[in-house]
Length: 366
Ligand code: GLA
Image (tube, rainbow, N blue to C red; front, side, top):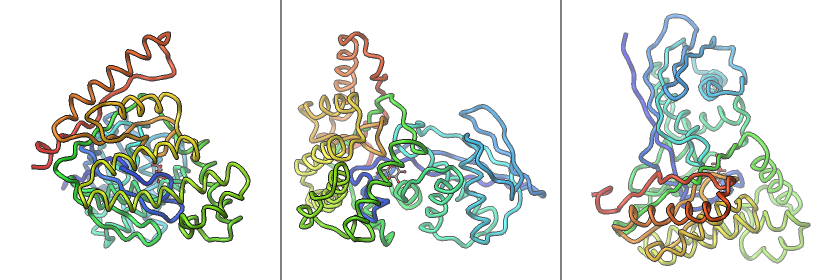
């Protein structure tokens, strides 16, 4: 029987954090790490799945998708979302292999969902466009996995292209590719501290944003601009700071697109720094170890700016650096971070950093 292969990348968000569930703007770009799947159709209604990373098979019957609290939920979420939108499926066997790190804020889950959905679309000849496919991935995660995420990660996994950032208006799902200048190096460094979006902080932040919008009398925080900040400041704490983050972050995304188009990397670096400060102080999704990593990166002579990327509470940082310097800068940053942890009583709360992307402009996008 025919084997269908499909894959989808992880992503790093350049800027625009916690704006996607507020109808705002985001600017992610795909990373080289991907999730790949192989699918073989079956004649019955069974789905059997092998995960290379877990080293195990798991199975379920179509129509019997329910939360089990493990990796299979992402696959079950996809078939459930397809069935609930009226797509006829039959069983299949699926093999998954991924080199997107888990829990690092680089969208391992969206890359898995989109790889699975692409393979199913092809195997069953489903007429679904790439934007709709991304929204099915989001639905899988919202409904079956139970993580109240926005659509940024899935849209980037579905529509992103290497060498470009993907500007997304998450209110309309309109997208535009913004080429990355060839004199910009991209660095992604995992802090080693894992996050989890199905629980805790992410859910609370989302609820706080919705409450702030309600108290301000707008459908979503996207409906406000920097001119409204005086009014926003009259909200009770912490709602005022949560809303201020989202409103100023939307503004920074637009400024970042303009800076990329003008190849103004200094301004882009300053926007990264301001975004991090806002996530740390107003949105409170950073942790001290990440603040340290960002500070070390920002102090590096070849780095224009750095910030926490993704949902936060751990995960990775993204930095932009002068062309041709990424590998050496990444090494300096991780070395300094490790030296500091060692000197501060082998601080266990810090995790072991890992360089995930040190993409030097000239070789990666030539
Ligand atoms: C996670 C979610 C996204 C987005 C970011 C924060 O990655 O999956 O939808 O909300 O956090 O910007």
